Length: 320
Ligand code: UT7
Image (cartoon, rainbow, N blue to C red; front, side, top):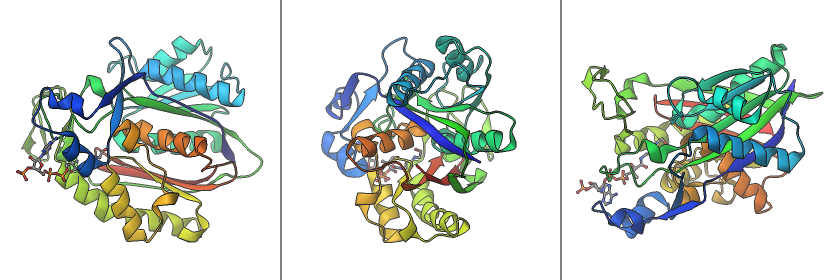
């Protein structure tokens, strides 16, 4: 049995408002805020990468909890914007934090990454394979966004969140689910290679490319169903949940999920307004904001569900 024993987050200092984009693309503050809910996002500095943001989030985790990470035996970094393809970002975090004896791996599942990381850590701890697992969702998306593409660059931001998962006398994870529609793979991708996805030739510019309308429709059509299935799997009803934390992709997607489930927005923490779409960091950033505002507290029942590039999703229900 396992639980989350510590939690921390970090966002870079540089605040970027919507007017910033008006300098070089045909857009405006009103369009961005009304279509996405985003007011600001953070961009990492030159030379600041996903591993650096990860280290800061873990430092925050240690400051919040007094946890010692020197004996962590596995590090999972969930990212879609790794420092580089090899070595993996988790290995950079191991080195930078001076952790002596940890296996390291990255999960590359875009905005669903953080919950996939939690699922993997839960499996490791509950099977006894590892005892103390650090799961980090970290993104430096500003390095891989196409600043010439007005349909996507206005969406993304940088940040990181970390949890420590350890054995527990009682089980804090109540259910998991995941699933994938690879048939939408070409609607959200990043590639350096002249290749095709589902027979569709793709642009190898090494930047994020998205068919926003298609992803939006998929998320709004599927995520409420997957939330209901997850709640049912846990033997619960929506009333048993204290909070639902979906990936913060777009405030309109979150509002559509709330409407579909007839669930109050006040119980759906989000990070998109302040930080934009931070992919695998968006769920921990939403939780941190809620905790800071007196929302999520120890013992609350929290459903998290990430979704994005794949298109893939992953969910869990956890006693915080
Ligand atoms: O995190 C991973 C998962 N990702 C998501 O969940 C993202 C899902 N998609 C979205 O959030 C939304 O689809 C977007 C925010 C990306 C776009 O919003 P939308 O309401 O779906 O807009 P649209 O793509 O239907 O475009 C509407 C219009 C178009 O003009 P026309 O064809 O109607 O003349 C676009 O060219 O808005 C135009 N447009 C813009 N106008 C000003 C697109 N981007 C911009 C822009 N500024 N930045």
